[in-house]
Amino acid sequence: MAQIYIASPFFSPEQVDRVQRVEEALKQNPTVSDFYSPRLHQDAQSEQFSKEWAAEIFKRDMDQIAAADVIVTVLDFEAQNIDSGTAYELGVATMSNKTILALQEKEEGVNLMVTESLHWYTKQAQDFATYDFKTLPQGEFVGEIL
Image (cartoon, rainbow, N blue to C red; front, top):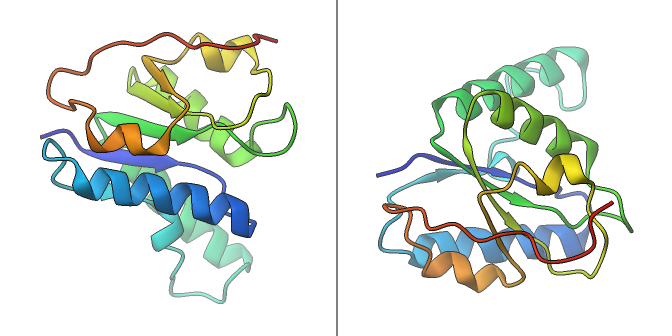
């Protein structure tokens, strides 16, 4: 079974709702045994938002990306911008030859550096409940490329 890392913003109620729907869809998927969602792992030894906390979270997330076979990402953030942390994670994943699957619910243009890194793309979070993580079928980005 593939190890999955979820790269997504979770700073507003809308963003949390979106990533929670992705997490729920992955839980329903019979080809998924486990996934890592940073949203669920913000606890650390140090005080939240301190330099020490940031270093611990960064290391943990980078270790999880390194261990992952597949990155599931949420592209929606604000207007035509992707969340900077998510963009960084996608760059690390691309340079590590990870398979990247993306959700985008909003109708916004996406930078070509992101669209060209994608293996599969969907407009519906629920599609992750039936996606075959064993065979990893491809699906191109559909939308405005910036």
